[in-house]
Length: 87
Image (cartoon, rainbow, N blue to C red; front, side):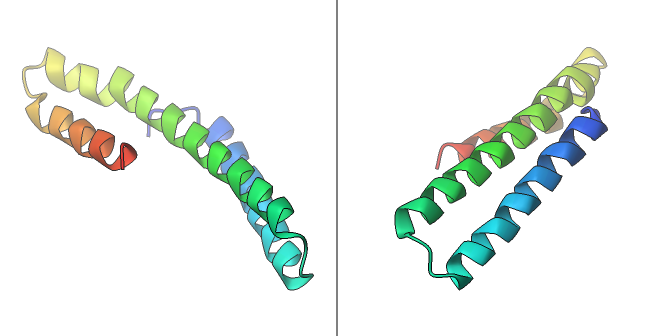
């Protein structure tokens, strides 16, 4: 993985803490809108982590593959991810 590992770990730990908080909120029968806001915040952190990982992949793995003339497979992987992100 080319991304800043410390930053990604920090983001995932934050998301994990938020998920733990979500479980507690559900167990305590908290207000639905409050739970929904927390879900959105958790999704935002995961999107940010994914974005950082994909940027690093493009700058590293994909750039190297394209530079060496073997980038078609790496580009196809990116296209597949972009398709999934758009759904």
